[in-house]
Length: 271
Image (cartoon, rainbow, N blue to C red; front, side, top):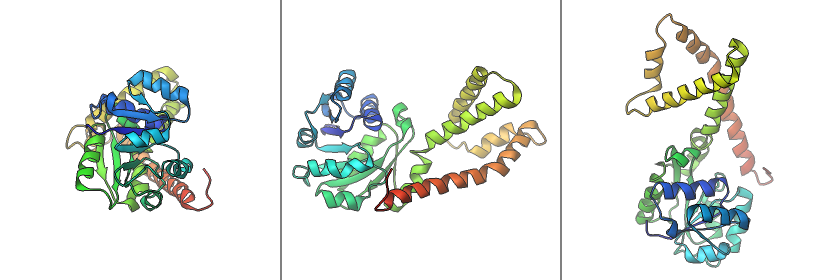
């Protein structure tokens, strides 16, 4: 991509996107600039990746074609107000704030607006980036945005009302999967006497291997279960336990994340 990409915020998400765009070949370091309120953090990632550190948010927006806003939800309005007069309709704004809707963004700028929710696996050029296009987005914009995030993940275009539940399935899910693995390992240590180090290594390697099997086109979870859990065997007993106990836990998880999203939507909500 020959466009100039400007990234506001080089924290966890902004830094990950910079590294992944370069790693995936989507953008050269020369075409990326970044701004951050902490100069030391900005200079560190510039030295690491070869991108251009912008003097401030206004300088970044002035020189960029695509601006990716990687700041926390409470900071979005303040940043948008800071650059309001130069964030014109010629610019394309991509926001990664999961609970700031298109109508809110469009009320703050005449720029062409898109919402994208990347996920941590993009660090390894894996996972999914959810994309919500506004009506201001042109067909050419759609193609460029899809190509940009397609270089680091699987781009998945959705409608805005779906973003909360889809975020739980994608952006939040790496933490959920890691928490499940952590508890599986801890239970093995408690219940079997396997050392913590051995349990961690064995479960981690098996988890990674299982993910690789699922990466084979056409392979389903049921395929793997049926290949391992032979009728009347030990694995089948364990699968039966999960089938009884796990669905209510997953239901609770989705209910809890929905409540948290609702708290962000409420006018008086605080993180």
